[in-house]
Length: 293
Image (tube, rainbow, N blue to C red):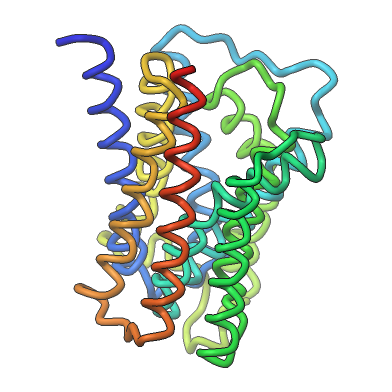
């Protein structure tokens, strides 16, 4: 099997895990989002650390990048939290929209903060995303804040990490290590001080039952395995190919929202998503054409 084919398969598997992860987080919907986030942080550090040891990679910390790692940790933790929250409150539609518009947000951030020059067709694609958000805000009567937070936190996450050369796995490892003290403090507080008393119980969910405890530990694999697969794929694929395959993630999320979670999708949603899909099609076609020239 050729390396490119292996790369495509790895990328497809990574995006499938991301796209279907809403099923996993729905299975532990009884656990408060901050508690889930804390476990995701802790077990991701363990899982990625083990992978780095197995692969013989050094735990190299990028010199002079402390602030960037801390900023990246803040943005990715906000992104993780709002995705978990979206699943728990039945807004997987919004999470899928957020990851659909993320590439267009990333393009706009590059133009604003890095001085990257965009072609008129790229600005047009970004404009379609803005129109789609406005249509949703007016038609539904509520700004799709979850979508915007997911798109912009992931966009700024990529922005602050631009230029880091330690690879995605080591980068995420140090990001979760930076968040580890907060995660441990939150979980210890949940157990010791009955911070969850409003839910009619005492202490955290971990250890309260075998099934929930095992699922919380598995959050490390759900988070880390796609990163390992993506790192493998990016070594073997063109960036344009990676970008196109990544749309599988929000597509699966949208499918779950409509087919499995039975979230209502009205005419306004269809129009907004259609505009986003048109914008992404224009953006992707332009990216492919540029890479081939």
